[in-house]
Length: 320
Image (cartoon, rainbow, N blue to C red; front, side, top):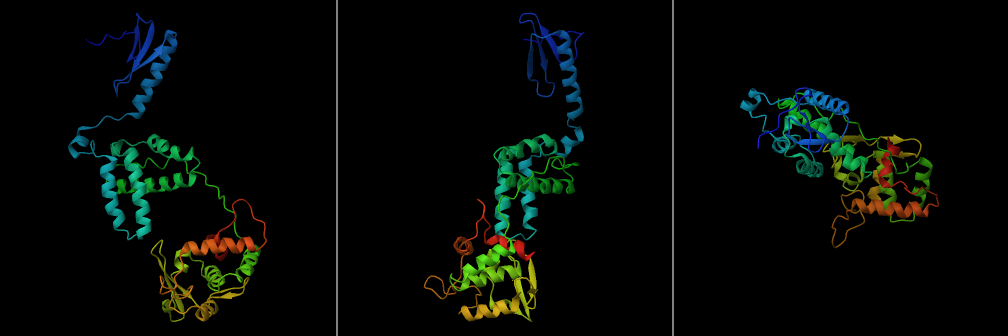
């Protein structure tokens, strides 16, 4: 059955059907028809004109040259395959690369079939909104960062000319965890004296170096060369050298002195060691062991904290 002719006095794609006494508008891009209902002719015309203008401003037909280049069929999923190759060249840590791979798998699942050159800010905003509505603003911010970098690389390789992520809002992330203050640190540190001998040393080492839990538990005496402590950060892969003369005046800590005290406790090359055990020849402490013991010391300190008290990780905020 052929399509009914449109009324020449109506805007394009708008028609009136006498049988239902209703107006209908057809999307010229998708060919999908939308019923406007039994509304006034003037209102139907106004809505149709607005819709036609929106289509004209936002739809770009695929040019012949794009078909020849293949960009009209190059999907987000195909670009993710290429982007993962670029990520591998950045020498990211194993943990960071694993996180990126999981994030990209989510992008592929939600947006993989969309043509890369046709991704709009609306697509990105809708994608991020799913986390924001669930209160996961930190996750939304992380995904926005990954998407922004992914599309930036697509621009560099000539697949697109504009980054659709740039116009989206950066999720406002509120820090829910209470910050650790020097006074509360000192109270917790005093309580730590009643914990295993390695723990107060771990707190001091974390404070004077400003490093993460994973780096603290892996520091070795053999990493000290020419009066410097060399650290290869597990999360970033960055290599830093911290002078043993580094001193924090307020708590009265000097890195070299803290390391000397670690030598008195540890019987292995590991600075923070619980001692040689059957299942751990070096006495390595798991990062979570620092967190759990910190919780015990925090509770024993007698300080009243909020519903989201600081963790061992917050010692870094004091170091900065």
